[in-house]
Image 1: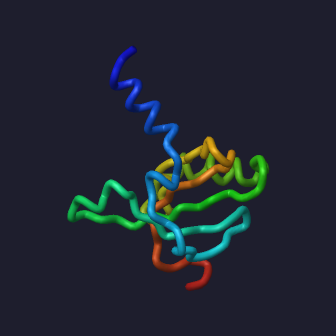
Image 2: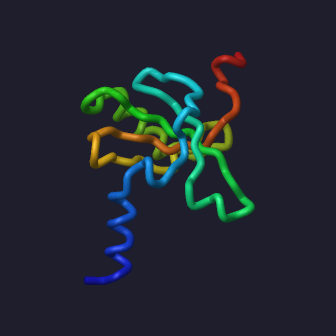
Length: 111
């Protein structure tokens, strides 16, 4: 089997807890779950540390509106719309996580 394929699939199966530091960094709650401020664990060796928003969808299964939100965020690419980086399916607890760019403020709260 190809080593690149093995590396890629093992990374895809890795746990969110193994890839990100987010414990105790709850920044808000959304309609579907909680939002955490997170950092990649492998970014600590670089000077370009970056914050992310890690959104855990807490309901079992995905509602149609959550699926629509994911589909829209995947398609929308605009400087004034939050960027969806990755959708992570957690194998251990069967939860869905959304990795987004971190924004310090919520536009709705500012309006």
